[in-house]
Structures are given as structure tokens and as C-alpha cells.
Image: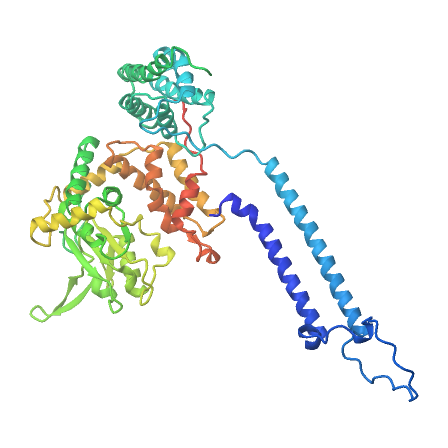
Length: 252
Length: 333
């Protein structure tokens, strides 16, 4: 899989490459047309066009010499015409390519401006990191509501446990950590509660109760609700301790 | 071992799931005495055996493919047979054939190595398709037919086939339709430095080549474990998640042919067995994710123009797992 920056630079590289190839081809065409004499060597400047202050020759009595049959050193009219056409073409193509490159760069810049900011990488906590205070705040603020849902909400203990677990996703959303669609509820909530510095054993216990309530056909009764309440109490202890350590309040 | 042509064993009684999980854990611990540091692939292989599936172990030589098959056979108390697949191996060499008994003046069926509880099909890609398909037919039908007579294979019957993924000369790669018959394809990979040293030090300490493993159950015990897997519940949302994963492989840009419905079925079956190993009698989405790569990876054909790229069945499964929504958190009852 190629990365984003590589993809963005690829058209520019291709454009520059194509420009180089076109220039080389044009040079080749010119060299082939002009022939080896003009391409690889030259007789120097046309002696007829050299302006020097030559001493005035004494008047001669002899007849003037006939003009030279062939003048190798000078460009004839057809050579000059070819060269002008080739040079004109090269200049035109170069200008066109510069314009194209400018348009491509402008488009790429606009695309970059319009494109949404890249999604932030999932926030994970290393073992020696402090809890994420935004998450801590969201969890502690909602703790009483969540406990109420588990204690009295839902038509059955099964539904109460599932709704209580779902409440963590509401808290995460308030903390700006939405659940990705491909993430399972357990994967996401375990990550969230790790950021909040919750007790891992209590989280595992509540996760087990949630999975049983959500995916099994087991009888889920009041004893499960009591166990879930105890696990939730221990889960909330960690973030509350973090709030106290932060000075009793957390800036949102 | 029941003789060829005998009736299959009666249905076994399932174990309590805690008991089954405990036995599965002890089996893995014991096998890991011989195959060091490969807990996850070994768990997958055991899950496939518990789901009555067959496993293709694809990896480089010397990484414990044969050892793991032999170890599972020992610990599960199964009859073990090894068939070395070579270019001149014939279907009858596997299935068995009728031989003339001069004393009784009649033909007698002599069963081949396929009549074993656990068959190690070593280097399955070194034999021509005719012999491969004879084995794969036996794997699917769990019976063989020779000279018009059908012989059921023992129950349980499991094939662990090995293949070397880097050698192509003189091999006959399995076609996709036949790969589909393996529930899982797993690779062991190289061990870490500590695990590799552990292999060396254990060998030096025991002063002999082979490791003796203790049988922890037998064929009847394995049938009971397999019956336990059959009691595992799979919620509709999880079943639909399996179907969505398999379907998503069919529309992926890198894929020529995606996983068949046998792929989604394989996901559900393997996830149930994985749940039992984890001590549950219900499947959670994480079980499906854990088995998705080995269940679906080999059922996906990559487009020919991508053969020289890094695209593979496993990379497609990884991407599919990052696309398909998982079951919702809330589902009221």
C-alpha cells in the first residue's frame, strides 16, 4: 500500500519525466535533421561576416576572382528554417508543460485544502502514562447516570447490563473518541477504560457480564446485576482517583 | 480404531463447557511442551480439530509442522498415520486397495493410511492432482469408495496437511476449489530468540530426539469435545457478521474470486470451537475476528495483475475486517 505523500508526488514526477523525454526526443529530431556536420562540429564563424579593419589592399589590375562554388561554414536558409521550427516547438512544449505542471500543483493544493483532516490515530495509553483527563472527565461526569441505568433501568437485568455497557460509548463520544464501525463494542470500551485508568480486573468482569447478556441465551438474573454494579463501582474508582489527583476538577 | 466398512460411532454426549475448556487448555499445554512458543497457531489447529475441520499448515521447513501434527495425535490419543506425498503416489496408496488372499481365495480390502484418526499429509503439493483430489474427496465425504464399495472413515477423522510455500519446482499447487475444503490455513512462523533457545536447551536436557507426550484423552473424548462445540450458540447478529465478512471479500478491488458461502460457514464453525477453547458456550464477535484470517485467507484468489505485489488473501481479510461493521452494542430482548 502506498502512502499518501507518495501518491501526491507521483503526478509531478511523471510530468517532469515526460518533459525530459520530450526534450530529448526533440533534440534527437533536430540532430537527425541537421546532420552530423552541424550537430557535432562547426567550422567556426562565417569568415564573410567577420568585420575587421583589414588594411586597404592596393588596387589590383587583375580581374576579380569568381565567387566560391560552395560555402560550407554558413547556415543556408533551409537549415535556419528547421532550427527555428524545432526551437519554436521546444519553447512551445516547455511552456505548455510548465502551465500543466502549475495547474496540477494548484489542483493538488486545492484537494489538500478541501480534504478532511486525517483521522487521529486511536488514542492508546502506555502502562506508565497518566490517564487521559478528557476521558476521565467524561466517565466521572456520567457515572451516576450510568449507575442508575444499571440499578433500575432496563426491563430486565440483561437489558440493564447491556445499556450500562453502551453508556461507555456515550461517554466516549462526549470525550471526542467515537467508536469506529469495525471495532467491536468490547474492543472499543476496553480501550476507552484503559485511557481512563480503570481497574483492569473490574473492566474484564463487566465485559464478561456484558458479553453474556448480549450474546448468550443464559439466564441473566439479579445476581448478574449485583455483580455488574460491583464491577462498575470499582471501574469508577480509578477515574475518580485521577480527578482527585488532578486537583478535584478537570478542564473539559 | 473401527475397521473399514464399520458403522460410525454413535453420537457422543457433550461435556460441560468449563470441563471442555479445561481439557482443551491442558491439551494445548501438553502440545506446547513439544512445539515451543506457538500458542496461538496451536489454538487455531485445535479449534479446527474440535470443529471437525481439516487444517493446511503452510510454512517453511523446520518450523514444527510435522511435530505439531504428531503431538496432537499423541495428546488426543488418536491413531496417527503419515503419508509422504510424492510425485509417484497413487490414490490407492492413500485409500487402500483389494488384495487377493490365496488361502481364502477371495479379495480382501487392505486400508490405506487415510483410515486413521489423524492423518498427516506431508507436502501435499508434491503429488499430482489425481491423488490430491482422492484425499480431498475423502476429507469432504468422510468415506472412500474402492471397486464400488464404500468404506466410512473413522470418527473422528482429521487431516493436517503441510505445504512449503516457497518451492514451486516439481509441485502441484492446490486449486482454489480444493483449498476451500480446508477449514483453516495456518502458518507457524519463526520463533522468537528466547523460544528458539528454549527449543535448543530442552533438546539438550532430554538427551534424545523425540519428546514423549502424555495422552490426555482418546477418540471418544475428542468426540465429546466435538459434541460440545455443536452446543455452542451463535447470535444472529454474529452469524450475519460472518456472512458480511465473506461477502465483502467478493467485492474487494484486489480480488478475482472471493470466499464462497463455505467461507462464512467455516467462520461460524471455527469461531464456535474457538469460543469453547476460551471457555464460553456462545460466540462473541472477537472470536470471529480471531479466526477470520486463517479461515478466509486461503479462499480468496487475488487478481493476476497483482501477483507480483504484496496483495494476498490475508491482506484482503485484514482490510475487510477494517471495513465491515461489527454487531451493534444494543440489541434489546
